[in-house]
Image (cartoon, rainbow, N blue to C red; front, side, top):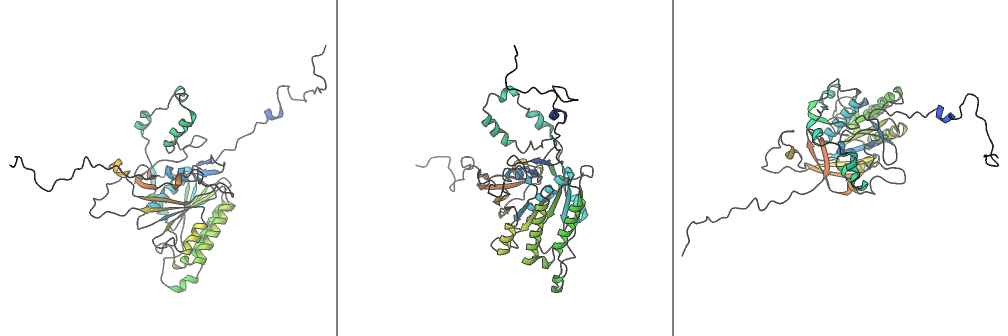
Length: 390
């Protein structure tokens, strides 16, 4: 009797191959190693990079970072420079990760103004040990994921185990040993002048695109580039001709084309002063349309007679007080059909930001402090008497 099933073809193994080996086993697939500072988005798998601010990465439409090939516009009201701190963290993160940072209108000495890496806190690591696997099984997986969201900023690591978002300290400066990337300053023409005849000369914004395109073409396909554009159209940094709508809109159209062409290599963050150019103007509306994400920083007005703020790092509770409101208008979408955080609606809450020396700009939901009426009793106007009046 034969134990072979009917209607089956017996095939002999090929020459040079054992019965237990197959061509797929002999040629294992090699996973493509990502560049440092990159990780796939948990939403759609596109590559993302960190902005250097962990709280800002969590707001970017669920990607956990700034997707490659996108541009973020950071608007700010008033005369403060909170958006400039975001740019410093963005540039410092790129230099630490080994990326090429292109700084517009900044001299090469701007490298010495970037924050340095924060020293690891051994107390916080020893005080909060990792839970055992048996303890994880006692709670539902849904509640376990909710608990991990609170510490999402601390566990900012990529798939390879390398840090995805580093911690910086504003009181320190980035050392040359910590910087693995290159800083390429891009000058913006000559000094601003009031001569109208200088408006018709070669545009300074077009030279930025030419230099950026030359750097992208000369670098390899695995090089990651970051573009830093501070205070766009500010008269202190750019010539008067750059404020013309034809110039700035052509610049943003060209930058958008480079972002789409090098969708796996280039990201950009632009700051914009809304005190000089309000959002109600048509030019600013067009600028917002040409950017993938738009956020705004609105610092709170200073109180008359209030004490000056404490220095950074002196009192951690005082530094956690909100220093302004954070508004989100648009975010990088998932795909052409939509998406971009509207499903969860987290960015629709009232958000505030504060400046901390150890964590930089921290963005969190805004909440009013509790009223302490019992502890602060108002003194009565009439003096109290010890005796009784008859």
